Length: 285
Length: 307
Picture 1 (cartoon, rainbow over the protein chains, first blue to last red):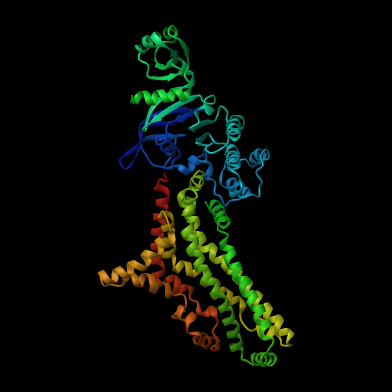
Picture 2: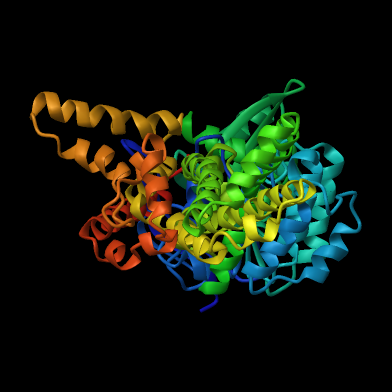
């Protein structure tokens, strides 16, 4: 069994709202998957289902376990940072480390100490005395020191300044990630993780609108910048989305050969953020 | 399982420092009162000397009763504080983690919801009484020591008047049994508070006490019976730990009854009836009710979606 997460027809409703609607996907070992979607698209609900924090319909298996019914076993092999505010504010840094050490079978105290010594986080400080950036550093230092197979990050850098954000992702790559470990991440700031990802999933209105590896994207999607008559010709090839920029038309194509489009203007592979807008907005217009 | 519980209990004491701060504050107040009180009466030299002389001439049973009554009066404040502390602790224990959103962190560690809720129950039923007991004993020792010093300065024999007067160890045993029995007897309330704490979205104190006050009134006016009144109010007053003695009455207006007990030479421990307590159906019924509430609290923590 090589897939770490396997979801088949997963749905979750809150009253009449279908937050997650018939979603199926697999996440393989050693991948970094970005789950990208607008607010209220169902990202957090889907992550909660994966983490066993909420029940769902359909079949969902994480590390071969049923997340909701086997949450304790699952949490020995999964780590997650759901939000920067999640650490209890009253706890001291030293107490937090003691607690995790005695509760988590896969925690390395020395590794946390080593990571923390690179930061300004004092051991006797309470979490409420730390800045938001320091809380995230602390949380990440702990998570990184847990030998977990899956790391789930839900908007981990929300509210952090640019330096902390950059550091956060480079720390994850340097200190945590290797071929044995897998990361599932959601964020609004897609640009920041674009180079990190091996796979992307777009979610909108509870449904997956794209599920592809980053390697597949250049073959599948092309962005064309064209003007005047060229734009008219290109439009006949059914772009999935079109926008204006500096008086030129920018069109996103799916499944149209790059060679064919080259004659109309400048072509390139769309950035994730632009591709996301094209897939989500293109579907509604 | 047990090691996990110990870690979780430690975490409860870290978070709720009131568990040891409250009894310590009371210990401090009582010790200060003992000192200032004795300094204050020092002004009335003659009266005090006569009183000490009188005490020296008391019979064995009277001296034992005097010291035991002193120990009981000290413990009353602790019992009161323990109950207030337990109410606030249980109401906060599952509410605070949702309010500050740290529940997502607590649920990200390999601990089940049942283990977490049980650790809060054990804190209320066992940790708080034991901590209270330890501080209570220390306070009684402090007050007796302060009194000894004072009595000795006035030339009396503190060993005879105080330390040999009452069976300290047996009194303490009785008090420990009493402190542990209170939360057992009032377990339905503890379970109810935990459930409210896990369930309510705001003002847990109000949500916990409104039904306790209004449901019995509603029952009386609508159905005309008083089952809830008996279950809630009569129960809190009548604990079958002391052989047929109304404990609440003893502590409020019936001081004379205590002295009477003292004069008859019965020790505090011999009044305590743990077997009768454990055999009373009321205790077990209460524990079952507590179990139902706690199960519901676990269920709520597990199934509630915080989004």
